[in-house]
Image (cartoon, rainbow, N blue to C red; front, side, top):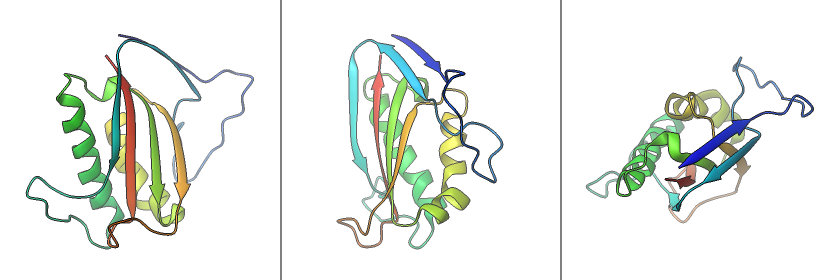
Length: 135
């Protein structure tokens, strides 16, 4: 696996309070086997929904699910090159959920897309995350 993460100086970086650092990588070059993790919702190992009305708790559970999925192929967060995050409220996610994402990816920022949607197949869901990795 070979991964190079960059933010070219010629590409402006937006600052989003309250975060002082970059929130994702602008560009990632990756070589290796591709691993795709389908969009995950906030269900635990017992298939119980976690974090009703709590985007931080849902984000934590979803990231645990993403990491467990990657572990199946012996890949950790450093192998993630892209995430797509879908939320029902971007403001709430930036205030309460993105810090959970950064706790996992701060040392190995992937390319990331954040999209606000009206709802999910699970009505209690506030967030869904999918991931792409290499090994």
